[in-house]
Length: 113
Length: 113
Image (cartoon, rainbow over all chains, first blue to last red; front, side):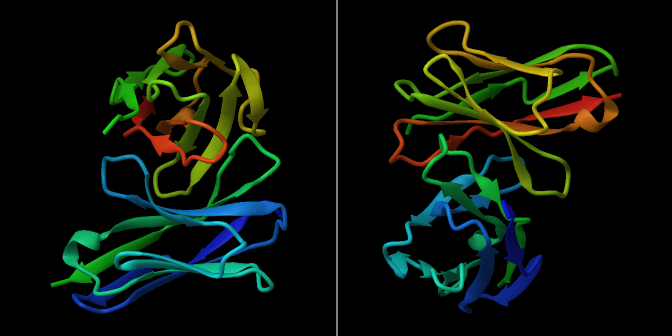
C-alpha cells in the first residue's frame, strides 16, 4: 500500500514533443506529490510538486495533472528539449509523517535533437 | 543557492568494516533525511531526523545503521559491519519546515568489496 508505481520505465521523445510520465498510488494518506529530476552523478532535484486540493499545476513547460479519485498523477513536459534528458521520479508523502518520501521506480527520458 | 553537501563522493570499504557518511544540510533547515539508491533501482527512504532524534525509519534502517548530528552543521550516517548489499548511492536531504520541499545532496557512492 506504500508503493508508488511509475510508468513508463523509459521514454524517447523528439525535440519539441510532449513527454508524459504517469504515477499511481494506493495510500490515501499521501497528500504531497513532488516530481524530481536526476542527472547522472547528481542527486534528485525538485522539479514541481502538487497537493490534492488542486487538479493541475503548471510551471513553465512542466505540468502536473492530478486525479484524486483515480489515485493517479502525471508529469507533462511540453516542447521537450535535449537538455530535459534525465531520469524523472515521482514521489509521495503522507501528511502524518515527517516528510518521508516514497519514490516511484523512475523514468529515463531521452529527447532526441 | 544553498546546497546540501555530502562527503566523500565515493567511499570504497572492505566488507565488515564501519563507514561514516557525512552531510552538511542547508543552514537553518530543521528536518534531515537519508535515502539510498541501489544501482538501477528507485530511491528508498532510510531515516528522518528532527529535533535531535529519529522521527521515522524504514525497515531497512536496522541496528546496523545509526545517525547523528554531532554539531550544528553536520549530519552523519554510520553503517557498522558493512555487507556487500550495502553498496549503493546514499543521499542526504534536508528541508526547512513541514511546508517546504526536501533538497538533496549529490550523494556518496558506497562500494563494499
